[in-house]
Length: 253
Ligand code: SF4
Image (cartoon, rainbow, N blue to C red):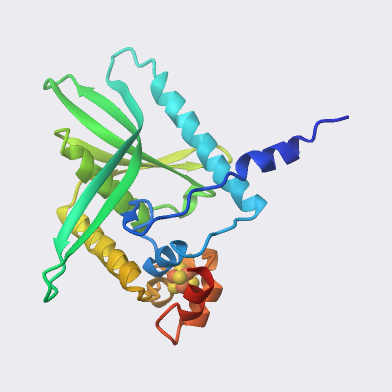
């Protein structure tokens, strides 16, 4: 009997992910619509087979770039591969300004996909680059780092610069069908880091108080494209006037 490879692929990519836990947040999500993130803590997303295959292409290309870095044969020794998928977890505590003097505590965890170490031989310094890789359908439309990708990389820069001097960000977009790339330098910006933490705090507060965040993607022309890909669009529409996820909380909690 001919092996059913298509079925094997489908089974391979349909891996069960662990449910999210309130109090643990991810830099890769914080630049996207906060209401969408909120829903993802209560409602499991079941992506269809085609979408899961597209996600897998991203993973495959990530492994490819990892191999390129690892096997780099630059004989001047300018680019030295350091490590892949550095995992981290950071704890945050803030006074919540309540009368009772409570604290708002949460964790941020994630992984920076790759770090390339570049030896600058001219002045004897080393500059480390955190490289974040994103796959896209068409590079033609990529003229600057997207807001969510920029926030994600900024957070990694903040975390890794605690260990390394001169760490810089490099966002690499790869076109899926021909492996052409566009790269963008992303220097650390303190204001963006503050914005990230502020968004994390807002998400955390909404989740713990069961208050629905504003539908920021729907209300912001620059973010509106996210609604077209949002698996929670139906819930979002239903909850629009209530301001709470009342019906869904009853169903999912
Ligand atoms: S439909 Fe749009 S506004 Fe609503 S949760 Fe999804 S991305 Fe956010």
